[in-house]
Length: 355
Image 1 (spheres, helix red, strand yellow):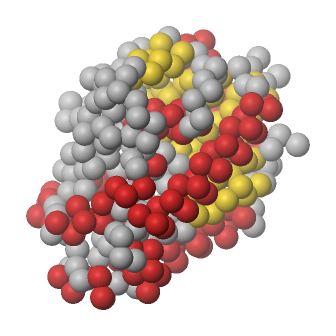
Image 2 (spheres, helix red, strand yellow):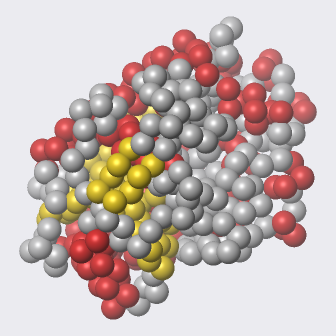
Protein backbone atom coordinates (compact mmCIF):
# COMPACT_ATOMS: atom_id res chain seq x y z
CA UNK A 1 0.00 0.00 0.00
CA UNK A 2 1.16 3.52 -0.77
CA UNK A 3 1.83 6.33 1.69
CA UNK A 4 0.93 9.96 1.08
CA UNK A 5 2.38 13.16 2.54
CA UNK A 6 0.62 16.50 1.99
CA UNK A 7 2.49 19.79 1.58
CA UNK A 8 1.22 23.30 0.84
CA UNK A 9 3.43 26.16 -0.35
CA UNK A 10 3.72 29.03 -2.84
CA UNK A 11 5.40 29.60 -6.21
CA UNK A 12 5.46 33.41 -5.82
CA UNK A 13 7.56 34.82 -8.72
CA UNK A 14 8.75 37.77 -6.65
CA UNK A 15 11.01 35.51 -4.61
CA UNK A 16 13.24 35.15 -7.68
CA UNK A 17 14.14 38.85 -7.95
CA UNK A 18 16.30 40.97 -5.59
CA UNK A 19 14.56 42.67 -2.67
CA UNK A 20 14.54 46.10 -4.29
CA UNK A 21 12.52 44.74 -7.23
CA UNK A 22 10.02 42.64 -5.29
CA UNK A 23 7.43 45.41 -4.90
CA UNK A 24 7.51 46.53 -8.52
CA UNK A 25 4.32 44.64 -9.43
CA UNK A 26 2.36 47.34 -7.58
CA UNK A 27 3.62 49.95 -10.03
CA UNK A 28 2.96 47.74 -13.04
CA UNK A 29 -0.59 47.06 -11.90
CA UNK A 30 -1.26 50.78 -11.42
CA UNK A 31 0.21 51.47 -14.87
CA UNK A 32 -2.19 48.91 -16.39
CA UNK A 33 -5.15 51.21 -15.64
CA UNK A 34 -6.96 48.56 -13.59
CA UNK A 35 -6.56 50.36 -10.26
CA UNK A 36 -9.17 53.11 -9.66
CA UNK A 37 -7.75 56.62 -9.86
CA UNK A 38 -8.55 57.28 -6.21
CA UNK A 39 -6.22 54.44 -5.14
CA UNK A 40 -3.24 55.34 -7.31
CA UNK A 41 -1.90 57.78 -4.72
CA UNK A 42 -0.08 56.03 -1.87
CA UNK A 43 -1.70 58.43 0.59
CA UNK A 44 -5.02 56.64 -0.05
CA UNK A 45 -3.64 53.16 0.63
CA UNK A 46 -4.45 51.17 3.79
CA UNK A 47 -2.05 51.98 6.60
CA UNK A 48 -0.40 48.51 6.63
CA UNK A 49 0.31 48.87 2.92
CA UNK A 50 1.84 52.32 3.36
CA UNK A 51 4.01 50.93 6.14
CA UNK A 52 5.29 48.10 3.93
CA UNK A 53 5.86 50.44 0.98
CA UNK A 54 7.64 52.98 3.21
CA UNK A 55 10.08 55.27 1.43
CA UNK A 56 11.85 52.55 -0.53
CA UNK A 57 9.00 50.98 -2.55
CA UNK A 58 8.96 47.99 -0.21
CA UNK A 59 12.65 47.03 -0.37
CA UNK A 60 13.16 46.78 3.41
CA UNK A 61 9.88 44.91 3.92
CA UNK A 62 10.87 42.61 1.05
CA UNK A 63 13.92 41.41 2.97
CA UNK A 64 11.73 40.22 5.84
CA UNK A 65 9.16 38.78 3.42
CA UNK A 66 11.95 36.80 1.75
CA UNK A 67 13.36 35.60 5.07
CA UNK A 68 10.04 34.11 6.11
CA UNK A 69 9.38 32.53 2.73
CA UNK A 70 12.83 30.97 2.54
CA UNK A 71 12.49 29.58 6.06
CA UNK A 72 9.08 28.21 5.11
CA UNK A 73 10.55 26.43 2.11
CA UNK A 74 13.39 25.03 4.18
CA UNK A 75 10.95 23.63 6.72
CA UNK A 76 8.76 22.07 4.04
CA UNK A 77 11.83 20.65 2.29
CA UNK A 78 12.92 19.03 5.56
CA UNK A 79 9.51 17.37 5.90
CA UNK A 80 9.84 16.18 2.29
CA UNK A 81 13.34 14.80 2.85
CA UNK A 82 12.29 13.08 6.07
CA UNK A 83 9.46 11.39 4.17
CA UNK A 84 11.77 10.44 1.26
CA UNK A 85 9.10 10.00 -1.43
CA UNK A 86 9.41 7.88 -4.54
CA UNK A 87 7.99 10.86 -6.44
CA UNK A 88 6.07 14.09 -5.90
CA UNK A 89 2.83 15.25 -7.50
CA UNK A 90 2.47 19.03 -7.80
CA UNK A 91 -0.94 20.63 -8.21
CA UNK A 92 -0.18 23.82 -10.12
CA UNK A 93 -1.75 26.24 -12.59
CA UNK A 94 -0.73 27.28 -16.08
CA UNK A 95 -0.86 30.97 -17.03
CA UNK A 96 -0.90 30.87 -20.81
CA UNK A 97 2.31 28.82 -20.88
CA UNK A 98 1.65 25.24 -22.01
CA UNK A 99 -2.06 25.82 -22.67
CA UNK A 100 -3.24 28.59 -24.99
CA UNK A 101 -6.00 29.17 -27.53
CA UNK A 102 -5.79 25.72 -29.09
CA UNK A 103 -6.53 23.82 -25.86
CA UNK A 104 -7.43 24.74 -22.26
CA UNK A 105 -8.06 21.52 -20.28
CA UNK A 106 -9.58 21.70 -16.79
CA UNK A 107 -6.94 19.20 -15.58
CA UNK A 108 -3.88 17.62 -17.18
CA UNK A 109 -1.37 15.12 -15.77
CA UNK A 110 2.11 15.11 -17.31
CA UNK A 111 3.62 11.64 -17.77
CA UNK A 112 6.94 13.06 -18.99
CA UNK A 113 10.24 11.19 -18.46
CA UNK A 114 12.38 14.33 -18.28
CA UNK A 115 11.56 18.03 -18.15
CA UNK A 116 14.13 20.64 -19.17
CA UNK A 117 13.31 24.23 -18.18
CA UNK A 118 14.93 27.63 -18.58
CA UNK A 119 12.97 29.67 -16.01
CA UNK A 120 15.02 32.84 -16.43
CA UNK A 121 14.72 32.98 -20.21
CA UNK A 122 11.43 34.87 -20.34
CA UNK A 123 11.64 38.37 -18.88
CA UNK A 124 8.35 39.91 -17.72
CA UNK A 125 6.50 40.79 -14.53
CA UNK A 126 6.11 37.09 -13.77
CA UNK A 127 9.18 35.59 -15.43
CA UNK A 128 12.07 37.85 -14.42
CA UNK A 129 15.49 37.25 -15.97
CA UNK A 130 17.29 38.94 -13.04
CA UNK A 131 17.54 36.43 -10.20
CA UNK A 132 18.88 36.36 -6.65
CA UNK A 133 21.13 33.37 -7.34
CA UNK A 134 22.98 35.20 -10.10
CA UNK A 135 22.34 32.30 -12.44
CA UNK A 136 22.57 32.71 -16.20
CA UNK A 137 19.50 33.66 -18.20
CA UNK A 138 19.79 30.50 -20.29
CA UNK A 139 20.60 28.10 -17.45
CA UNK A 140 18.79 24.79 -17.80
CA UNK A 141 17.15 22.93 -14.94
CA UNK A 142 16.37 19.26 -15.42
CA UNK A 143 13.64 17.41 -13.55
CA UNK A 144 13.07 13.68 -13.85
CA UNK A 145 9.49 12.54 -14.27
CA UNK A 146 7.73 9.39 -13.08
CA UNK A 147 5.65 8.11 -16.03
CA UNK A 148 4.60 4.90 -14.28
CA UNK A 149 3.20 6.80 -11.32
CA UNK A 150 1.53 9.34 -13.60
CA UNK A 151 -0.12 6.62 -15.69
CA UNK A 152 -1.34 4.83 -12.58
CA UNK A 153 -2.87 8.06 -11.33
CA UNK A 154 -4.49 8.85 -14.68
CA UNK A 155 -5.99 5.38 -15.01
CA UNK A 156 -7.41 5.35 -11.48
CA UNK A 157 -8.89 8.84 -11.82
CA UNK A 158 -10.49 7.94 -15.14
CA UNK A 159 -11.96 4.82 -13.53
CA UNK A 160 -13.58 7.11 -10.96
CA UNK A 161 -15.18 9.28 -13.65
CA UNK A 162 -12.60 12.06 -14.08
CA UNK A 163 -12.01 12.53 -17.81
CA UNK A 164 -8.45 13.79 -17.61
CA UNK A 165 -6.20 15.22 -20.25
CA UNK A 166 -2.69 13.87 -20.12
CA UNK A 167 0.56 14.67 -21.90
CA UNK A 168 3.80 12.90 -22.75
CA UNK A 169 5.65 16.12 -23.55
CA UNK A 170 5.76 19.79 -22.63
CA UNK A 171 4.44 22.36 -25.10
CA UNK A 172 5.94 25.48 -23.46
CA UNK A 173 9.06 26.59 -25.29
CA UNK A 174 11.06 27.15 -22.10
CA UNK A 175 9.87 24.11 -20.17
CA UNK A 176 7.62 23.73 -17.16
CA UNK A 177 5.04 26.40 -16.40
CA UNK A 178 6.24 28.68 -13.61
CA UNK A 179 3.92 27.16 -10.99
CA UNK A 180 5.93 23.94 -11.27
CA UNK A 181 9.46 25.10 -11.98
CA UNK A 182 9.32 27.83 -9.31
CA UNK A 183 8.20 25.21 -6.80
CA UNK A 184 11.29 23.15 -7.60
CA UNK A 185 13.59 26.21 -7.56
CA UNK A 186 12.35 27.25 -4.13
CA UNK A 187 12.37 23.78 -2.59
CA UNK A 188 16.03 23.83 -3.61
CA UNK A 189 16.59 27.48 -2.65
CA UNK A 190 19.98 26.58 -1.16
CA UNK A 191 20.96 24.73 -4.36
CA UNK A 192 21.68 21.36 -2.79
CA UNK A 193 19.80 19.46 -5.50
CA UNK A 194 16.29 18.04 -5.85
CA UNK A 195 16.45 14.25 -6.21
CA UNK A 196 12.76 13.37 -6.41
CA UNK A 197 10.90 12.55 -9.65
CA UNK A 198 8.06 14.97 -10.44
CA UNK A 199 4.54 14.53 -11.82
CA UNK A 200 3.05 17.95 -12.68
CA UNK A 201 -0.74 18.03 -12.29
CA UNK A 202 -2.20 21.05 -14.09
CA UNK A 203 -5.35 22.73 -12.74
CA UNK A 204 -7.07 25.45 -14.79
CA UNK A 205 -7.26 27.96 -11.96
CA UNK A 206 -7.63 31.06 -14.11
CA UNK A 207 -10.83 30.09 -15.89
CA UNK A 208 -12.51 33.24 -17.14
CA UNK A 209 -9.24 35.19 -17.52
CA UNK A 210 -6.78 32.57 -18.77
CA UNK A 211 -6.71 33.65 -22.43
CA UNK A 212 -7.95 37.23 -22.24
CA UNK A 213 -5.14 38.17 -19.79
CA UNK A 214 -2.51 36.20 -21.75
CA UNK A 215 -1.00 35.06 -18.47
CA UNK A 216 -0.36 38.60 -17.22
CA UNK A 217 -1.92 41.37 -15.21
CA UNK A 218 -4.39 42.38 -17.92
CA UNK A 219 -5.62 45.91 -18.52
CA UNK A 220 -8.83 47.67 -17.59
CA UNK A 221 -10.24 47.09 -21.09
CA UNK A 222 -9.29 43.39 -21.12
CA UNK A 223 -10.78 42.55 -17.74
CA UNK A 224 -13.96 44.61 -17.87
CA UNK A 225 -17.31 43.07 -18.80
CA UNK A 226 -18.54 39.52 -19.32
CA UNK A 227 -18.22 39.67 -23.12
CA UNK A 228 -14.45 39.23 -22.90
CA UNK A 229 -14.58 36.44 -20.32
CA UNK A 230 -13.38 32.93 -21.09
CA UNK A 231 -15.40 29.94 -19.87
CA UNK A 232 -14.86 29.13 -16.18
CA UNK A 233 -12.41 26.60 -14.83
CA UNK A 234 -13.37 23.59 -12.72
CA UNK A 235 -15.41 24.22 -9.60
CA UNK A 236 -14.07 24.01 -6.09
CA UNK A 237 -16.31 20.98 -5.52
CA UNK A 238 -14.80 19.22 -8.53
CA UNK A 239 -11.26 20.01 -7.40
CA UNK A 240 -12.03 18.76 -3.89
CA UNK A 241 -13.47 15.51 -5.29
CA UNK A 242 -10.48 15.13 -7.61
CA UNK A 243 -8.14 15.50 -4.66
CA UNK A 244 -10.00 12.83 -2.71
CA UNK A 245 -9.84 10.46 -5.68
CA UNK A 246 -6.12 11.21 -6.04
CA UNK A 247 -5.55 10.20 -2.42
CA UNK A 248 -7.40 6.93 -2.98
CA UNK A 249 -5.41 6.23 -6.13
CA UNK A 250 -2.08 6.81 -4.43
CA UNK A 251 -3.02 4.84 -1.32
CA UNK A 252 -3.50 1.77 -3.53
CA UNK A 253 -0.19 2.31 -5.32
CA UNK A 254 3.15 0.73 -4.37
CA UNK A 255 4.78 4.15 -3.90
CA UNK A 256 5.45 6.77 -1.27
CA UNK A 257 4.15 10.02 -2.76
CA UNK A 258 4.26 13.65 -1.65
CA UNK A 259 1.22 15.65 -2.81
CA UNK A 260 2.13 19.34 -3.12
CA UNK A 261 -0.26 22.26 -3.61
CA UNK A 262 1.61 25.21 -5.09
CA UNK A 263 0.10 28.69 -5.02
CA UNK A 264 -0.23 31.88 -3.07
CA UNK A 265 -3.77 32.80 -2.05
CA UNK A 266 -5.63 35.96 -3.15
CA UNK A 267 -3.69 37.90 -5.79
CA UNK A 268 -3.83 41.68 -5.81
CA UNK A 269 -3.97 42.01 -9.60
CA UNK A 270 -6.98 39.62 -9.67
CA UNK A 271 -8.99 41.18 -6.83
CA UNK A 272 -11.70 43.65 -7.93
CA UNK A 273 -12.86 43.88 -4.32
CA UNK A 274 -9.70 45.83 -3.44
CA UNK A 275 -9.43 47.74 -6.71
CA UNK A 276 -6.65 45.34 -7.80
CA UNK A 277 -4.29 47.17 -5.42
CA UNK A 278 -3.72 44.58 -2.69
CA UNK A 279 -4.82 41.05 -1.78
CA UNK A 280 -8.16 40.35 -0.09
CA UNK A 281 -6.68 39.94 3.37
CA UNK A 282 -10.01 39.28 5.09
CA UNK A 283 -10.98 36.50 2.68
CA UNK A 284 -7.55 34.92 3.05
CA UNK A 285 -7.82 35.06 6.83
CA UNK A 286 -11.14 33.22 6.61
CA UNK A 287 -9.58 30.48 4.46
CA UNK A 288 -6.59 30.28 6.80
CA UNK A 289 -8.85 29.84 9.84
CA UNK A 290 -10.62 26.98 8.04
CA UNK A 291 -7.29 25.33 7.25
CA UNK A 292 -5.98 25.80 10.78
CA UNK A 293 -9.18 24.51 12.39
CA UNK A 294 -9.53 21.45 10.17
CA UNK A 295 -12.64 22.67 8.32
CA UNK A 296 -11.35 21.87 4.85
CA UNK A 297 -14.78 20.73 3.69
CA UNK A 298 -15.78 24.42 3.72
CA UNK A 299 -13.51 24.92 0.72
CA UNK A 300 -15.55 22.42 -1.29
CA UNK A 301 -18.51 24.80 -1.12
CA UNK A 302 -16.74 27.90 -2.44
CA UNK A 303 -18.40 29.25 -5.59
CA UNK A 304 -16.61 30.79 -8.56
CA UNK A 305 -18.16 34.21 -7.86
CA UNK A 306 -16.70 34.19 -4.34
CA UNK A 307 -13.32 32.89 -5.51
CA UNK A 308 -12.96 35.46 -8.30
CA UNK A 309 -14.16 38.40 -6.20
CA UNK A 310 -11.34 37.64 -3.75
CA UNK A 311 -8.72 36.89 -6.40
CA UNK A 312 -8.34 33.41 -4.89
CA UNK A 313 -8.23 31.69 -8.29
CA UNK A 314 -5.07 29.73 -7.50
CA UNK A 315 -6.52 28.42 -4.26
CA UNK A 316 -7.98 25.66 -6.47
CA UNK A 317 -4.54 24.02 -6.27
CA UNK A 318 -4.84 23.96 -2.48
CA UNK A 319 -8.45 22.77 -2.74
CA UNK A 320 -7.25 19.69 -4.64
CA UNK A 321 -4.82 19.02 -1.79
CA UNK A 322 -7.56 19.74 0.76
CA UNK A 323 -9.79 17.10 -0.82
CA UNK A 324 -6.97 14.57 -0.58
CA UNK A 325 -6.14 15.39 3.02
CA UNK A 326 -9.81 15.43 4.05
CA UNK A 327 -10.22 11.96 2.52
CA UNK A 328 -7.21 10.75 4.49
CA UNK A 329 -8.38 12.37 7.74
CA UNK A 330 -5.33 14.62 7.99
CA UNK A 331 -4.98 17.95 9.82
CA UNK A 332 -2.58 20.67 8.75
CA UNK A 333 0.47 21.61 10.75
CA UNK A 334 0.97 25.27 9.93
CA UNK A 335 4.59 26.15 9.19
CA UNK A 336 3.91 29.85 8.58
CA UNK A 337 1.22 32.25 7.41
CA UNK A 338 2.72 35.35 5.78
CA UNK A 339 0.40 38.30 5.17
CA UNK A 340 1.27 41.19 2.89
CA UNK A 341 -0.38 44.15 1.17
CA UNK A 342 2.51 45.05 -1.16
CA UNK A 343 3.89 41.72 -2.37
CA UNK A 344 0.84 40.68 -4.42
CA UNK A 345 -0.37 37.78 -2.27
CA UNK A 346 -0.35 36.29 1.18
CA UNK A 347 1.38 32.92 1.45
CA UNK A 348 0.88 29.79 3.50
CA UNK A 349 3.19 26.88 4.29
CA UNK A 350 1.67 23.73 5.73
CA UNK A 351 2.53 20.07 6.28
CA UNK A 352 -0.08 17.33 6.57
CA UNK A 353 1.87 14.62 8.43
CA UNK A 354 1.23 10.94 7.82
CA UNK A 355 0.84 10.30 11.53
